Image (cartoon, rainbow, N blue to C red):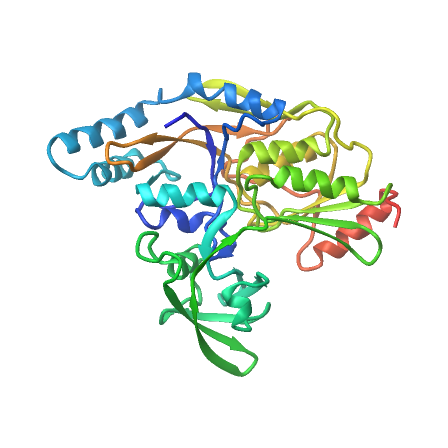
Length: 395
């Protein structure tokens, strides 16, 4: 397996649960950790990022310890994956994970923008209720008539009130091996005083992680739900198509991360080269830089919240530190660690933390998050439009 550094949203160590933290805001969607792809069509910044992977690969002693435990287990006729899980548990690495071969394949599909699910996005409200925030057009959920604002009460009979959305994801997706496309999941729902159940059949969907549209005042709204493959190109296209002089709102709320090169590519849409982030791999310092030629003059506001994490925080920190955007919303999640995967004898993959990244000004994100320039809650979008007016955006 080629070496790749990963900038990942949080996940559990237990097999089968690791993927539940991917696309943390997307029910039945899985999501993206951040990784450095190896496509020959990568941009200059992607190629530079790729070059730093080889000399940092596999040197961490914890990786060696996990790999050794798996190899010894295989030699003794025991499960390498289970041995790796025990070693990972003892490592004290809160972001560590062990994927089965099937889970890792599903994970790669998610990074490519494909997933198996029912097409729901959700969030947990302050009172513990889980509310549907978005329904993908043409998905099983949309066909069943589920709407934004519906309350999700249960999944396969298990109550979800008070549970983290990540646990709800785990219930809704089911085990990666036991719940492929074609299997069913039963949702308990409520709309106003009406309560009912819907049995949906999981299917393979694409993430559609970038959407763009115009707000009534002429502002272009670009929402990036995750940095899957192609996200940066989609953002660049949306920027090119925006009316001259009009402001842009870059909505990163609920963005749980993704491919780091896509986040760097997105930064390149608004910067003319320069530093995006620094990070370390086993103590060796690295840097990520934007490509030249981005739009550096158009007024820009970035929206963030507590669900903005990992590669999305990397992007936010770069634009904020470089003075390219006003950040509006609430403090981000604070996931700024770097993971690297290693192959096990049975095809499984162990992933351990090897370092942390920092914003251009040297701000450490892990455990701290990014503080917005302007605090805003439910009215964040309206606040962003007001800010753009103050920045001189043309409507």
